[in-house]
Image 1 (tube, rainbow over the protein chains, first blue to last red):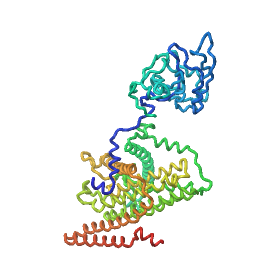
Image 2 (tube, each protein chain N blue to C red; image 1 turned 180 degrees about the vertical axis):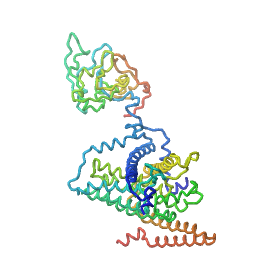
Image 3 (cartoon, one colour; image 1 turned 60 degrees about the vertical axis):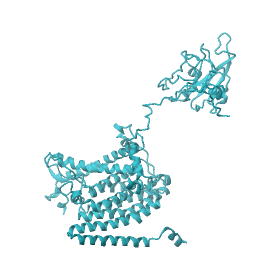
Image 4 (cartoon, each protein chain N blue to C red; image 1 turned 45 degrees about the vertical axis):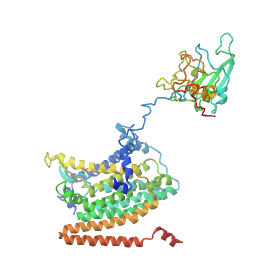
Length: 209
Length: 403
């Protein structure tokens, strides 16, 4: 060892030692990481527990979107068969996934928790029409799950925690509200509990003031 | 004269059979080198990946063995471009000029012992030249032509800079390379590669240790390895293609199969140099045979020598990969001053010392005379080094003179 040091050849020992250490590579398509519950993926449009749509067509998501990928048109609810509780509903709702950067500002901007994101990121399309998701494709099904489109690769329960980011940033992202239920129920899931590892009320550090 | 080259020519007549045997040997050697390059590149990528906690190529074929083949096929079908300012014939010629010396150098390497092909006794090497060691030196020198002409013919400045570097580097290290071999030649008393191997091997495999062959060779081997790394533009001496400074070096303007040939030549050179090191220093194909079998058994004549040769080459190739994974690239001025001011001097002194080893062993002097000779030689070498040291200007002095 002394001789190696004298000639400054310790580096050879370093490289040799690395040969017997475990590999860090994750062979992606074969093995996958567990997705963190707050990951931003493909969007869904949520519905209330009674099946009514949450979207009220206010266009706040479209306004806040930095990539200008959301197109919304609101319309008055039909009186005899309302789509959403309240006066208006999202008549047209389109997201262009060629532009979306999955920043989730739309999720934070939404006043009714209508738009949230799944964990899905493995979706690739071969034409521009498929890239533009319409309201039909974005709206959750009757079981509260996202619709699975042919070009999307759903590996597992990637739509289990669709509203996690919304819940973790609810009430304008104020840390004081962490751990407090401050959101409405969802079709198929009911009222979701706060994040399990979120600090209890009163224990929150005021980090951003 | 020709009968001494190979037992194949002993009868003197050169018929169809002899011609076929020679042709088979040439084609087999070339194919062996090509396959070896393919496997070496895979091996290198895998080992470096291991040393960096990665997995490395694993998609094409079992364990990714066929990755190089896939890359080669891809390069073969890619478009080849020639810059408008290029010297077209030379530009086209350069890749072949760089690959041929690598193969020609391998021709004199003994891969195995004496075997019979088509009922003819022959040596398992393409040719056993009486000047084999000189042939190796000559071919390693000619190898620079391909790189130099490639850079010059590209008509572009980065390739030109790369090839200028290559030329300077190869010329500098050629001297140390030749001098490091000299000790072995002095000891073996022959230039034929098979003769050198035979001299190392004698009869018993442990003769390397008992007869002290390693004494004159040990430092020469170190110098040889360093110089050979520099000759083959292998890291840490790969300034020829320092991508941070020169884009891609001499091969910047090359694409498609011509680029692949340069690549092939580079790795072929590494393999050939390892084979040369095995031949000159590590006893070539010699090694313990299977004792429980007959001497003339096919395992003992064919398989075992080739196995030992391959084993030694693979061990050296692993060392080159290890060096590649461990050492950063040298700075250019340090490369030059290391080559000229240290390596060549060390090689000269070691030639002197190994000559004394051989002389003293030959003459069988008594202990007193031997010690006296040693003192004299070591003293002379030290004196020469001191004079050299005093003559070479120090860095500060040089700058003063320029002012």
